[in-house]
Image 1: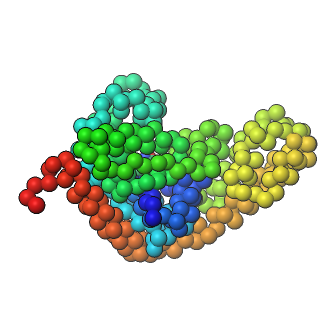
Image 2 (image 1 turned 180 degrees about the vertical axis):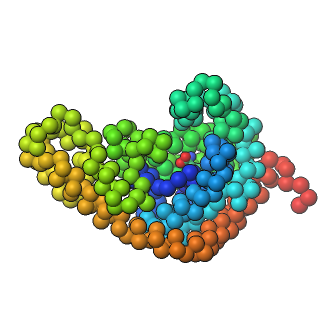
Image 3 (image 1 turned 120 degrees about the vertical axis):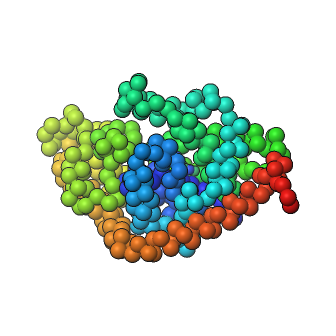
Length: 334
Ligand code: TRP
């Protein structure tokens, strides 16, 4: 059986971008693969080291969100990164195999540095060693569990490529030990925000969260960006630039073809269209909210799930570590 390894940073609640871009896929894949899902608290601390409360709180919220969208703890192992010291050890070993300039050229890291500069200014927050090195730590995450498949959104592809390079380098120096992973993209690997931005993101303020109340979802749907040329109800419009149409598509509205045709012919008003979308979204969110409520009231269950998942993950990482140390000739005192 192939192994899936994926991870997510605990920095807040899950939103629809996470769900449709990657996380929803995990709930399907857990039936076919041995699945490890890492709550990447160490990685979250690389740019939230000054806000430990946020990370701590988000570990719980995120685990609840994952369980609520259908991650089944009897199938998938949800675990906490900082409780697997082998990942930190591997990170140290791999850091010799990566140059600083290669890290600086990583497109995901580059984009994040640019965003930081926009947020804090050139002289603001400077780039830490830990932040620049997080792709190395992510390579350790993946390889510690011999992950073959890594289901992620397309923003993660450069990190995966960097992991593959590290694996090849390691194997060429120390002998075939590590597995080269492959990305597994969902049907929509990047999800647009309600404002039409190419990416839905927390910092962009354009996300619908799985934990949003019905009222919040309503306000967000009603504020979605539509074709700006359409002024009157019976104006013809272009659904391809309309966020409401886009989310009808994501949610899998079976009426999609008609929506598209009516919109183009000027037979569909935006408010009615939004109300239809709202109904579909609330229908989708109802069972998610019920589970969120259940797990929020049963923190001991959430804790047990994390403990059990982490203990299984740790065993697997220990096995890998043995092989790695043998290959590197640092397996002393056998
Ligand atoms: N970098 C990922 C994100 O920002 C989270 C992550 C951590 C991850 N470790 C991973 C993803 C390992 C895939 C595999 O969402």
